[in-house]
Image (cartoon, rainbow, N blue to C red; front, side, top):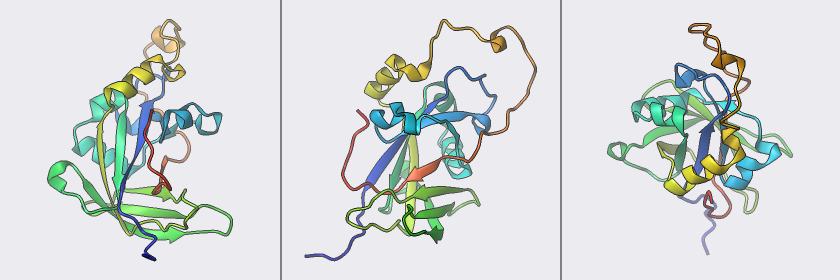
Length: 195
């Protein structure tokens, strides 16, 4: 029996742009709903929107997915196994691990090519898992069935609803990113799918 509690796997996080917010000129100022599954995304606990950390922004821009990300959303794929840059994967190294008693452990990951970073939370509790020393990240367009779910969900808002921004133009006012940026989930205890 192996005593190695570190596994090498790939998991995902889906990000959907906030509906009803004025369209930002750049993904740098956009807010996203997020979740590992559709149930998480619809849960009131996960209802708040978050800006993207600089590490994810770097991957989205370098992968040329900014337009799709702002329009429909995207999937963040995370792997603890070595992946190839030629396949769109970007390596991040764990620069800092923090854990408090009774709380989820957290790690700060820094891009191997730049100073862009992101935070990851260790959500796995049984068996005790450690956050990986290095992760590989890539982004991709939403799968068709996820896109269909998004279009039918309440996340897109009422398309007939008008707002003040529909009738005015204040120029290039970039809103500051709301609150703390999104923290990525660590390796899961069990495999899962979005739908």
